[in-house]
Structures are given as C-alpha cells and as structure tokens.
Length: 116
Image (cartoon, rainbow, N blue to C red):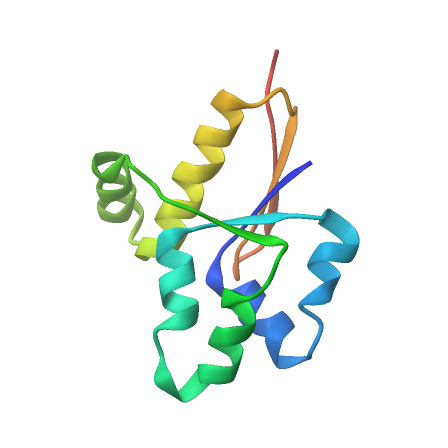
C-alpha cells in the first residue's frame, strides 16, 4: 500500500511521541515538499523539525505540476500541503502497480482504489 500524508497527522504523531507507528504499519510514508516545508519551517518546533528531517521512513517528493496544484487550491480552498498531497496521490496512482493508496489528512483518512 502506498501512504501519503498531510501535515496534521504527522504533527499529531510527533506530539504523542509515536511517529514510529508510521514505520511499524506502513514502512514508508510519502509527503510532498510543501508538507515537509510546513513541518520544518517553524523555528519554535526545531526538535520536531529535526525528527522529520532525520526520519528514514518519510520520503519527500517534489511536485512538478504547479498548475494542477493551483487549480485544486482555488477550487477547494485547501492549503498548499493538502493540494500537493492530492496531486502526489494522483501521480502515484498513474505510476504504480498498487491498487490502493491511503491519504491521511486532518479531515479524515481516505482510501482511494484504482479501477483496472
């Protein structure tokens, strides 16, 4: 299973000291660059930012499709990290043999299935 996360679930796991659950249950979690930037840019949370930077099971992915991200932001009102997570999920569906992708956001967990 491919797992993509938004910022809020990662912050919640950091707060309770259980970021390791991601590795235990999923092995790898992919986050778009915007989510990584949100997690590591606030100087008040330097320790948490360092934990994210050094986490071996979080993989940061650069999103190249700025136009699609911008359209999602304008249409839905979502922030940059959430919008990039949607584009990342869509790109992973196109590039992968996986038939299921889980997306974690603060709103809810969504399972997306690909029809083959």
